[in-house]
Image 1 (tube, rainbow, N blue to C red):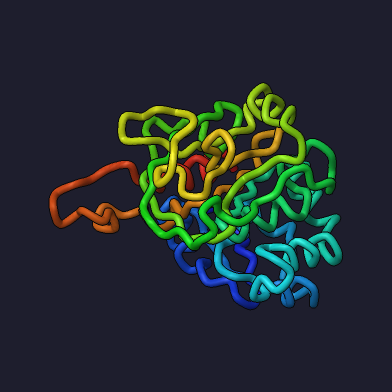
Image 2 (spheres, rainbow, N blue to C red):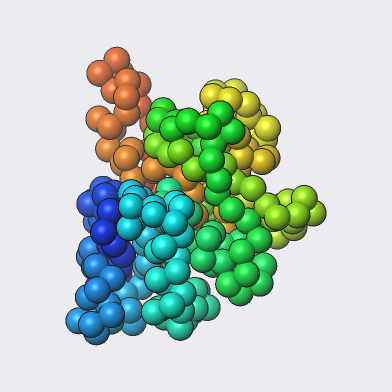
Length: 255
């Protein structure tokens, strides 16, 4: 029986169809569910084995990127979120979903629901949209631990600069294998990639982090946009590889 993927939808979410396609391709059965359906008990969290918060502009980012959706999850679904995470089920937040997980305190997860990090305006203060190379780092993160090669995929964000409230927390992230993905250059230098390779100016070139348990991943780039060979921007010129699909397969095969 294929694992079921719950893809949360809020007004303004616009990348859920692409994520659903990626998970279906990876061997799961993905379902896009509006938050109102969960509040009305039309759908049950317990029926799903994987949880995803997709990208877009949930609730128009009226309080800041991902902030209002984070408040909704903590106000109406705090117990369900905590149970999902504590159970070890895979949880993924992409772009706006990453912002939601961080601003809701679900990541980095040092202390429950206490934000110790943020995703703020890009260092150059402008929206960044380009393809980037991601280097898998964490062997603890179930999403990245078996990835054999980098991921080549696009970013599209204005508030993707990962920052911590205290400098010492960076060492904690490293020691606990919570830095899941970093921006890399074509020569595969793993850390301290500079602009434009690091489009947002994130500390330590961080593109994605996981919780200490390793089942919750948040990342700014969009691996769901490169799961087919023909989606490579230079496919017509014969370039292939570095697909984002193995990241989704990793999660599906764990449940």
